[in-house]
Image (cartoon, rainbow over all chains, first blue to last red; front, side, top):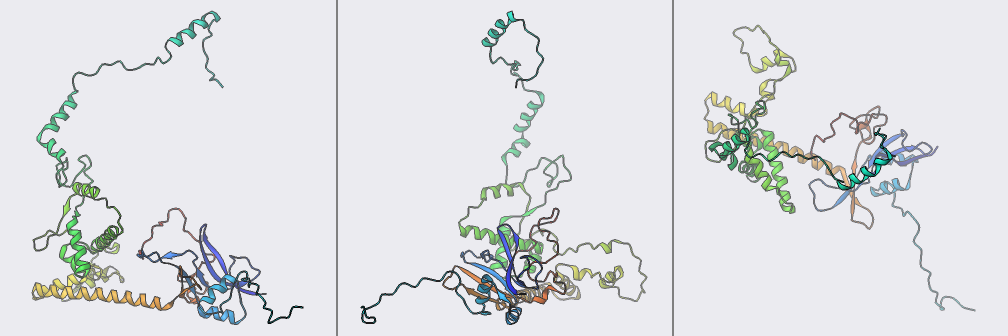
Length: 114
Length: 321
């Protein structure tokens, strides 16, 4: 069975907190995973006593376990990949629809028109 | 639906008469016809007499100090002898505490011992003054008239530098331990020097002595030195140095912890974006323990009860970041 690195949503309504888990692909989202390798708080927060308006998101991650699971073939989901690529555990990847390449104009010097 | 009220049946002939009657006085209601009193009641008269008298007018004038009805200085409600109001620090003193701690850099314990204010109160005053200053810089409006009015109603203690001052409260009080509430008879040889440590162990093996449990053990050391024969000024200087050193050690420890956490954290931005920073803190999976339920572990504790909304549990945070 495929082993995935994915997020499990916990917390309350409008206040999610995600566990970054290693689990079998066919198991339920919030079921007990093989291992919890970290957490991801998606709500941007300010530092205490900081009025500059700068926000940050907190992620806790065990980099060694993450590397191990990638090494033995665990497949990160897109969101997990995005997080893992930020700390260089997996290479960067473009997600979403590919940007359309504009149609190029062809000059007659390169092609012969019959 | 009309109310089911039994009404005396009216003969048809009388119907006309009753309807005409209600038309003439549609809003007829009973109202009090008692005339106004020409004279005041006895008690009301006495009240006005008292208000005009010396004591009454002095109460109405509202001086700067609290002015209670009762015979005692600290009993605001004369019929409730159990309520005694405690004195509070006045604003000048609080300002002075803040200045000593933050501007002059005195240790909190030294300030506490000098001014006769509890260590926790000194810390609280400094924190609240910081908040007040923050509000002023933020342009928030302070409720100064309200604060003034409240301060007028409370007994106050003050501290002025270079004067003889009364201490606000005892600063080195030890909490009474439950195990020390029993009566004990410990036979001890006359030659033995029975110390506070011995007394503590007599109650229980794990009870600490009063010296250790006191909030300001350095003060005890200072007094002991004075008893031994050193001068008060000299030992006071030593006391200040000791508390300063202790405070600096704590600050260094906190700084070290902060640096360690900073080292463990990697800060990255998403590609082509600077709005939100992502902070990756390295953790260890093994902190969750063998069964994965340890409170030191990271993430959701599977299977452990989550009691964040349980009734009867205090949800007020117990620490500040």
